Structures are given as structure tokens and as C-alpha cells.
Length: 452
Image 1 (cartoon, rainbow, N blue to C red):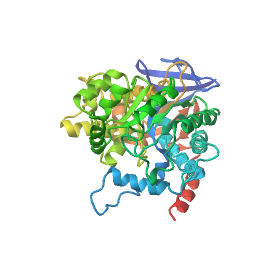
Image 2: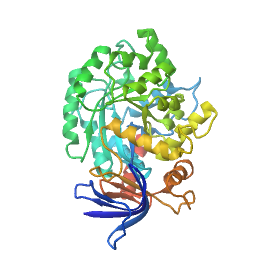
Image 3: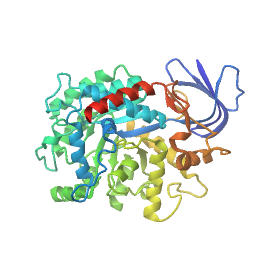
Image 4: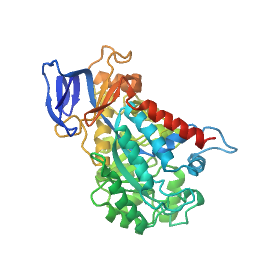
């Protein structure tokens, strides 16, 4: 039995002092004792937070971070960025994906994420030919998760069409495309890939309403069973306009009317929604998957998070394109987007004398855990996924309780993270992942070759 002692820890019921956490051989929390006396054998730290959940990532895109920041001949947009992404993946193979994903996972753990929801759509060989093992690329993601120690919810993506109404996929999408039978084989093979990872979860993801037909969506719902279901939705106004032209309804409106959307679902982005759609999405029980750093980078827009939360909606955060990976930055930009659109401060605190940083952290943890099909938080029986803060960091000095989270989110960022435990194993110490140097060297070699 491993025992950690924290001067202060954020438990489900709030902050507690002098907390001893016992971790069993399987990496789960076996006991939590507040107001304890430290023993000589305890590993001592100042401040414990539950590890954050990253509900939406495309790990391979870490390799193209910064490659689409040169202005084109006309105005740039998500759609021109997508063309750059298609060019980047042209030559990326399974070994490359494993190297890039491992680098992303190291940065996620160092940045405070302890579980990854991988929205995985890069399935086939560069010419579009399926690999002999349909889960070859999924195996590269699982390899990266296993090497770095991060928890994994794998979300294989079904992608069949280039636009609404079942239009033929484009050449740039050849590596993503499946039919239903082939996708069912991918799911089965992915179960085998995940078998060696502790507490791994398998869900699925219709890529978007652009990429699936209504008939395919119904078949995917059947394949999902009780697992998580994620979908990109209403990220861009062009998508909304195209959906209206195809169906007479907006994307979120159409999905809620035509699918059994419930607490298993995560609607990623949902950027462009009406007040009616916002209320209906909150009532559905689904999670809004928000990726503020990527949404800002791509010029998507800003989700009406304050209205959504006021209606009882749940949300989580994701690193999406992995242009930057930092729990604090995602939460900070989520709040700042609301401030800029509403011209107010402390919007997401949603109540008098409430901490904005702590509210963001607790809400994103709960929503993200729901979306990825896991339990989260420092509670009995849960995986011992823990982040300790460096209370000597200049931004955190002399803070306690929620004030420490405020300082972490709005002033300290990833530099204020000291250690990270995943299932009770310390994978980050002094802000550095235990395998950082080896993972980085492999990543550097991979990128030098891909970009030569």
C-alpha cells in the first residue's frame, strides 16, 4: 500500500487539510483520511487536485502545430487549415503516429491532464488502403498511452462522406473513410488493442453530420451500446448553413430531433447554437466538449457557456488540435471568451463569492469524466489520478483553497504543476515527465524526417 500525504487536498466535498491518501496495488484509492498526522513513511506534498480529463484530442495534429500560421492568398479559415492538415497526414505512418502521440501525451500529463479522449480518425495507409490490422493506427495511440502512463478513452471515428447528404469523400479524406461493416471490424480490433491498458474505455464517434448519413448514424448508435458517443457539431457557420440547406434544420437542432442524445453523448464545439438549441442541449444530459485554445486558433467562435451552465448544462475541456497543451490555458480561455462576449468578469463562477477558477476546474472535471465514461475525483475506489501544485511558485505563494486554483488557472499555468500521479504511479516529478527525454528525441527524429 502506497501512502501520500498532502497539506491540503480538493476532495469531492471540498477542501480538506492534512490528508493521507492510501493507494492499493491496482492504483485505486483505498483510503482517504483528512485531519491526519503525517507518518515518517508518507510521501509529503503541499496541495492535491484530482487529475483533469482531456475529452477531445487528435494526437497526430501535435506534429503540425504552428505549420498553418502563414496567411494564404485570400482570407484563411478552418477550411484552409483543414487542407494543411490533409497535406500533413499524407506521409504519416503508424510509427510516426506513435511518436507524435507519445509527445502529446507527455505534454498532457505535464500540463495536468491524466486521461485522454482520443477522437481517432486516421485509420488507413497513405494511399487509403486499409492496413491488414484494421486497428493498426489505434494501436499506435494505445502504445503512446501505455508508454507515457496516461489513461485512454479511445473513440474510433466513423467518416464516410465529404458533406451533408452522403456526398463522395474527397481525396484528402481517403485515410479516414469506412463503411459500417469495416467500422464494426475496427471496433472489434480496437477492443483487443486496449486490452493491455488499465481502465481503458472504448467508445465511438460519428465524425460529424457532414460525414455520416442519417441511416449510418442509426447503425452507429446501435454499435455504441452503453459506451461514449462523441461528434463534432456546429463548429463553423458554413457547417450550419450547409445543414440548413440539406435538412431545413441547424446541426444541433437536427441531431437532438433525430438521435437518442443522452448522457453518453458529447457534442464537441457546438459553437454556433441558438438559445433554443442551448437549452435543449442542456436538457438532453449530453456534455458540451469545449476546446477554447483550438477554437480560438481556428477562428471558430465562442460557445455560449454561461447560458448553457445556467440551464443546467455540463461541459468538459479538450486540447483538440494540440496547438498548445495546458489545462490552465483551456480553462482560462474558456472564461476569457465569455468575458469578451459579455463584457463582464468572473462569468463562469455563476454565483456570488464563488471562485471562478475552482468552479471551472470542478465543472470541467465532472463533465469530462462523464463524457469519457469514467469516474474522476479523489474518492474511494477511483483511480489515483492526482496533480500536486508547487505552492512555492510565484503565482501561488500565500494562497490556500480555491484561491490556489484561481492562481493556477489565471496566473500560474502548467509551470505551477509539481507532480502528477496516474493510477498511483508518479509519472511527473518537478514538472518533468519521467520519460520526457526519450519521448522527445523520438518525436524530434520523426518530425525532422517528415518535414525534410
